[in-house]
Length: 166
Ligand code: SF4
Figure 1 (cartoon, rainbow, N blue to C red):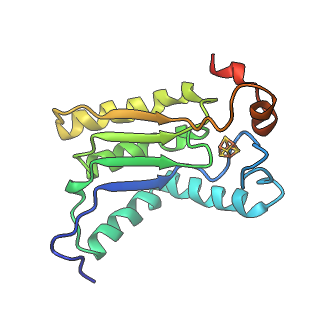
Figure 2 (cartoon, rainbow, N blue to C red):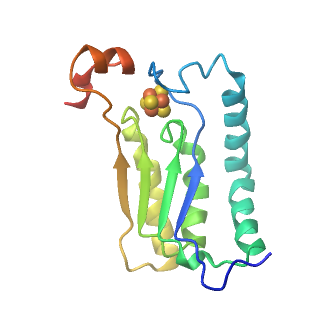
């Protein structure tokens, strides 16, 4: 298969985890532990991050469609909550950033309960930048959804108080 000559990949999205540590009432992940599929899928994904097959498969896809990783400028780490198992992602994210060596933005949608784990990603970024001798910055963008105004509607939907944002 050959991608069109003019096509290129700008954004790469990877699944950091399929589970979340919150149980917002309106979310499809609310009953994640009753729906074993999410838990089983998460186990498979974590295994693939740890044994290196997740990154190898990404490389295979680029090769199969004959597309360069050099045009990727955005890397998004998606979830579930992508920051709950970051220790599994330290090495793979380093490998991805050395493979897609022109990444400038790393986007992470997060519920902000585990932002301390962000240090793991920052270590990966620093190490990768040194490896590829990158001169540009890699900006880390955290994305938080605020789905209701302060008060009971917000707090009952999210299982935590709005005050946590303060
Ligand atoms: S924080 Fe986000 S992903 Fe987690 S349960 Fe709530 S809406 Fe779903």
